[in-house]
Length: 346
Image (tube, rainbow, N blue to C red; front, top):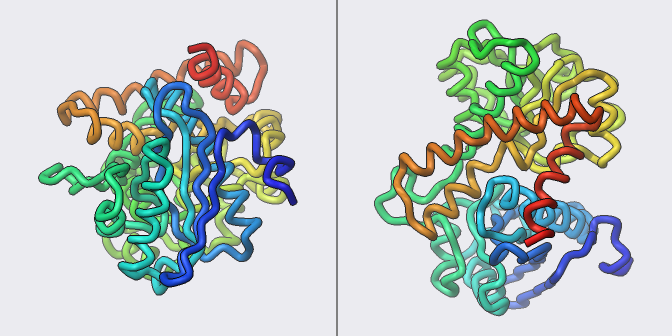
């Protein structure tokens, strides 16, 4: 299939493929839009089943970053990078250096950061070959890791969804199913536990589940059994496309609010959620804390300013929910229109 005819291409400005024989690096960088500024987006490493799966992921993710930066009022465009490989066994210094060379070759149009399958230490290795990185601020509270800020933003957004749907901001006794308790999902679960929520968790890695059970008092559930739980909120915090024809039919939670990117398998699923009266917090709105963190690391600003910016996620979501009800449109469509007003008209 030609990249230009790919269903997820959607006006991307630049898609680059790179193979480095000596290190074994196979990577793709997609730049969707740079109308508001250079494209910033994380570098994901994942054992994709095929090159097609990797291409689809990077195209969807990079487009989402354009919308995320725009809705968050940041002077950034949208891009993403994926490395095809197992993050637990495939990383070498040579591979990360080759990735840095690849990023450098784009001349600053794309800026990378940590993402699923990569850590701050990996970005530090990439930074030995390129200055076009974010997330390595020395002496910062989290050492450059945006995960805590992402999790806090999702928590703020989840509270907004609960307030809109149930008319209350108190999360005590609220039942929340968290799918994926890695860097962001575990921190979100911590916030929820501290607020008095009852947690149900699942993850593809057993040690992540064990940690949540031991440290947070969560209840472990199977990946398959998650969809049938009678809970108040479903919080997807793993990979995308988990809201699809099959899962929507089984989903019992009246709210979907989580950290994962590209939660909807297709645009049609936003309308299906609305028809089932399930309130959906659009993913790139609720999880924008990480890109805000990366922006402040590059451009400066205090921790207090960053926190205040992250907390604007609440008002943005409440506006989306209200417009959705007024215009009888899916929240995903409303969010897209709000973002497009910003990056297409400037």
